Length: 119
Image (cartoon, rainbow, N blue to C red; front, side):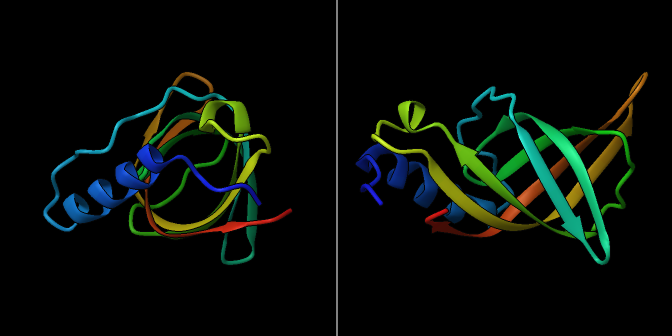
């Protein structure tokens, strides 16, 4: 797998350091891409609304409970990341809030742990 650009590593470090204090310092990227979310025995298809190094905002047809641990994989376009190949990131996090919208739910979740993987 190609190496990440140094600026992205810096964004991840800043976001992780500030997440412990509750200060939002991570830059949000308005990315709309499909993502599959897993928790317990449930799997739900969703679409990202925005992504940062410390969290994610999703649109889905199923409500999620705040505090619920979740797992998901982000497939970031290599071009957006400044590398030749797409970047696959396996994430673990937890739901922070869930708001009903007209025909969907807006779910905000933290990204507590992540690892880069080859797919």
